[in-house]
Length: 94
Image (cartoon, rainbow, N blue to C red; front, side):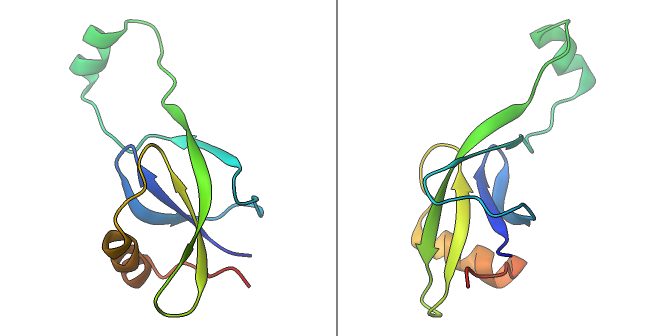
């Protein structure tokens, strides 16, 4: 089962394990951006939901493998994705 690399909302290609999700799908996951308790209380006194929808796509690496990635807004640069593949070693799509 391939890993899913997350980009955006504080994520920089870290892999997450998930049941297979189709290219073009949407993956809901938590933001990695951290806030202090004081910042949260000023922003909203009630509980906040930090889940965000990430758009799932496939990336074809220079190493010949394809990887699943989920991006919050804009696609990262190819070089940033290649660095994340080297750093986090996700399982490719078979």
